[in-house]
Length: 213
Image (cartoon, rainbow, N blue to C red; front, side, top):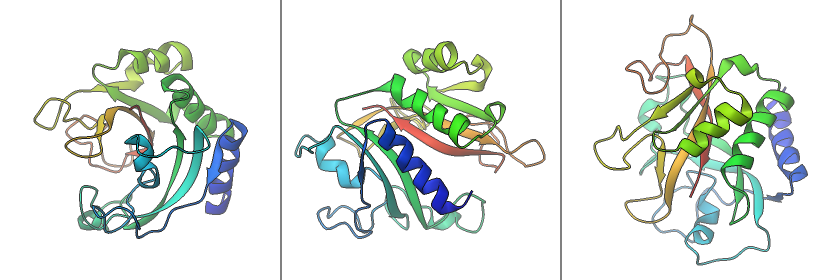
């Protein structure tokens, strides 16, 4: 499957779920002085999450051109040292503005990865914020992921809600727990599962982040 196939399949899948396909916003944002470059798919929807804008749709999907070379999300110092960091990349995203929430988000992610892209389910594991019992139960009781493959991550960055699994736009503003999906390349690749001392290795690679705000 080519990059173009992956991109088209993603957009077509979420369009079939009632999402409006939204074009990538410019790499240099025109209305956000806090950013030199667009660094994630949510940048063009920032005003929506802040309640300052309203779109003619409640579900959106996009493939956003991103560049992470400074600021909060700076991958520059890791480029060339890992198999997963790049300065420029495209972020595939699906967005709900007051419509669906955790259940649909997680189930559709799993459906796309395992039934459409055909990734082996036994190679996938998930993380949830330590206190997010709802997401944990959706993974284990509804989707069927074994509990030992759903890892709870707590406040591991020195403060309340300072966690790899609690997403924040900034020190103030939209925020919420998140649930990430990882692909296991196998024991022949160095590295440990998320939350372990060896998590910076390349064995377990994050391929999806579901953020709940």
